[in-house]
Image 1 (cartoon, one colour):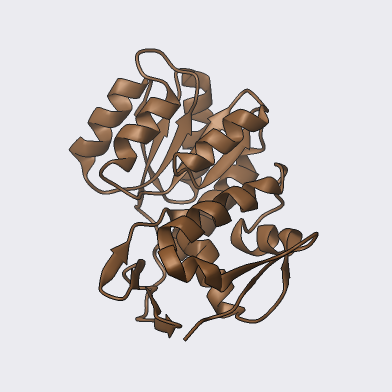
Image 2: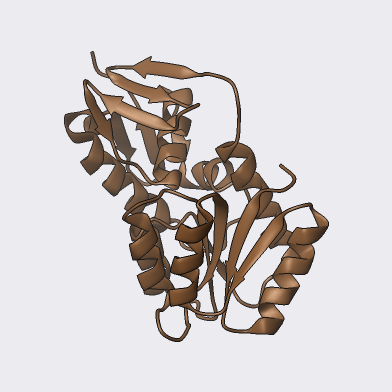
Length: 225
C-alpha cells in the first residue's frame, strides 16, 4: 500500500508534522491541510485520497462540517481526532459517517496501526460476493444491494453487515463485535454499536429484521427467505 495518499487535517502544524512523520515512515504520501476549507479543496483537487485524518476543532470550517461536505460525495474512510472525550461528540461523529474516533493525546503508533487496518480492508482484492436472504454483498466493489436497490452504507456499516453475515446464526456480544469490526481496543462506549445497528437496520428496510437483538448481550444475524 506504499504511496497511498492520506489527507491530514489539523490547525496545529506540530500535530500535522508528527502524524506525517510516522505515516511517511510506512511509505504513505501525506497531504496536509491547516483548516477545514483547505481540506475540502485539497480532497476534491487530489481525487485519489485513500483516507482522511481529521481534527474536530479548526478555523473557517470545523471537522463536522468537513465530514458532512465530503460524505455528500465520497465514502473515503475518515479518522476523527478530538481533544474532547464527550460521548455526544463521539456519537455525532459516527452518525456523520466517520470510521474511527481517536481522542488526543494519542499514540502515533496506534494511529498508524488503525490507518493500516482500515486501508488493508478497503484495498482488499479478490472478487467476493455473498447473497444471504436477499441481501447481496459485493466485497470487491464494497456494494450492498437489497433486490435491485443499491443500499448506501458508510464504511463501518458495511464492515458491520459483513461481519454479521459471515457469522450468521451466531450470538455476538458487543465486546466481540468491537474487537472484530473496530479491530483494535476501543475505548468508547459500546453503545456505539447500537447506533450503527439502528442505522443499518433502517437502511436495509424490511431486511433489517435479519439483525436480531439479544437483550443484555448483543446481536445475531438470521437470514430470512
